[in-house]
Length: 196
Ligand SMILES: [Zn+2]
Image 1: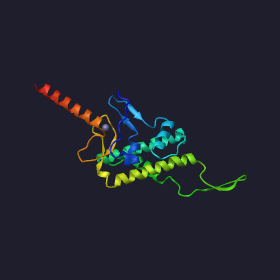
Image 2: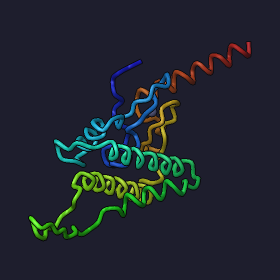
Image 3: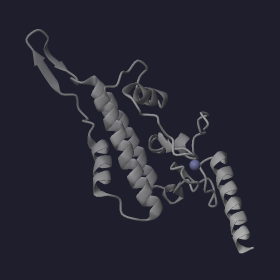
Image 4: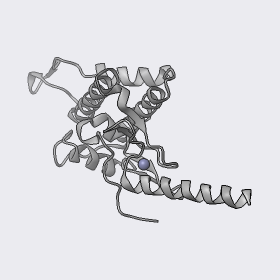
């Protein structure tokens, strides 16, 4: 089992939604790597993608929200690549993330401070804003010029999504391509051996 991280799948650099969808991956042998495995990991993911300021500390509630959006994204991407209808709950989740960010800061009153304007839970605002940006990117990806090139990696068990750089590209990485070629030549040898 390798511990070297896979290079980002094609399209990931330009699409936050693809980056989030691919933040969980199944490696050969069935090992799953989850970049949102803890509140600390989820924080690091947001910071490294420019979606939260350094020093943010997510709560497990926020971590679960982000992981929930990832599940909705993966389901919607899967349905797009298979040409089927997405689960209504996944579409709801995406739409909630798209619209959950209030545009105006509300007024608050306290006897000590009087009237102040602002959001009471700045941390959940950070996460809601991040999720809105990711959902916005997903909506654009799914309906824009790249939509037809959205694909899932063909080298099982890899389950990453990508935007194909050319029509015949079927693998998210050289490593997956090499594994798929090895699997195919093994299958061909097996077929020949059976035919003899
Ligand atoms: Zn792959």
